[in-house]
Length: 198
Image 1 (cartoon, rainbow, N blue to C red):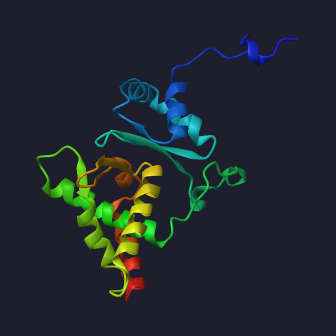
Image 2: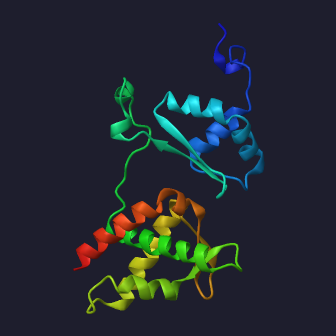
Image 3: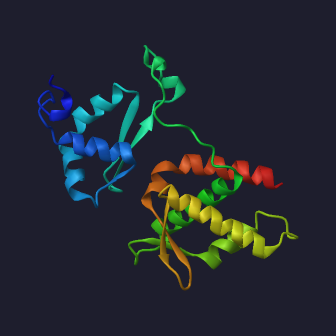
């Protein structure tokens, strides 16, 4: 008996599968030049392929990023509401959301004001000054710093950040954060955080 395991019944190999898998794994960055070139050469077919399973292909050429977005509830019509969701929505929680807002602000400043550097890098001490202002003055600073470091590691797992250097400790804010948190959403989140703080 012949099975697909021996490769005889597989459809002909298409390179677009490489880009498709990279996108399903997370974010495709133009720094991965071979996969990025495949993506752009097969953009139309990949867009149609992912649309059939309820996913929107988002390509930001200026940032060199591509990612998949799940259809919103208002977009899931014409039978698409029957599709199971591929990505689970996991609430970040207050501290992770707060850190995302602070980092996104840093990235916006970097784009607007920093013309000399290619990467948005923020030192831990500077980040901590902004972070602690959202907590009561009587909070223990050592514990607050530990919570910040823990939240940094969580966002690193989500690929929003990358450790840049150990001394002084600094983190690189990755383009993915900008892609996942556009300006409109940033303003919305900041307003909610400020409301909670009051």
